[in-house]
Every structure is written in structure tokens, then in C-alpha cells.
Amino acid sequence: MHMTKFALVLCALSLGLASCSKPTGDEPIAETDRAQSASQSAQAAAEPAAIARTQSPEGARVFFITPSDGDTVTNPISIEFGIEGMSVNKAGDEQPNSGHHHLLIDTDLPDPGLPIPADSSHVHFGDGSTSTQISLEQGTHSLRMLLGDYRHIPHDPPVISEPITITVE
Image 1 (cartoon, helix red, strand yellow):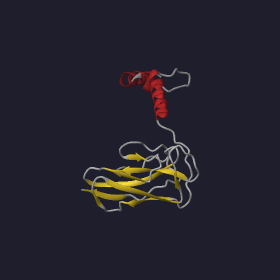
Image 2: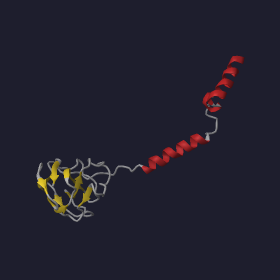
Image 3: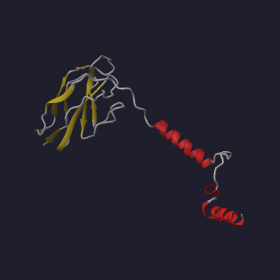
């Protein structure tokens, strides 16, 4: 028994008392445990939850009419979007088998369970546009189209184009 007390004292001195004791379930929760628990809860609350997705019909697709993969272009760049198996509607207009275009520029696909971001890499066409003109810096760029539902959320399964690469002179 004397050796056990000695080991506990030694452990308490080198590692801290809380590290050496076995919890019995009756001990109060340490402040660090409360802070860690609160931090984990806040992190979970800060992470956006996935949203139910609108179903897309089988065979639906979006594609670029212009430009074509491998094209060399100059500013302003004319882009025309194509769609088959669905219709294009304005954002906020909830209609079956419909959505609106999003142009992804030099970026990966966004999380399909969340609204598509709106920034310089994720250009929204919530007005129902099927063409646009953009300007990009000289160099090689990757473009991809992604259809979003009336809430800007990708369909299930996502209706996405094959990526194309263009060179801007």
C-alpha cells in the first residue's frame, strides 16, 4: 500500500493530479473538460448542416456551347450554356426538373449538400441567363458548369458539365 501512495505522489508531481486518478463518475467535471466540450459544441454549430437536395431527372446534363475545350480566346470571353433534360428558371422559382446555371472558374466542385458559394470562382446566373461575357487574366483557365436548384443547391445527382480548359491571350 505504501508503494501505491508513493506512485500516486510521484505521478501527481510529474504529470498533474488529474492525469493520475481514475474517474469514478462522482467527480465534478473539470473546467478544462467543460471548455473543451463547449468548444466542440460551438464547432459543431459553426459547421453548416447539409440541406435536402432536389432530385435531377436521369440523363439531365449541362454543357458549353461556346467556348470549346482547348480554345484560345480573348477578352471579353463569350460563353453560352447548354442544357438537356431540364429547363432553366430563375433562382427562387421552384419548378420540377429545373434550375439555373453556375459557372465554376479555376475551382473544384463545391460541397453538393450546401448552397453554391457566390464569389469570383463561382459565378451565379440566378436570373436564368444561358449566356454571358466574362474577362479573365491571360493564361490557362478551367471552366465547369453546375446547375443549382431554386435555392442554389446542386441537384441529386449533381448536373455538372465536363471541365473545359481555355487559354486567354
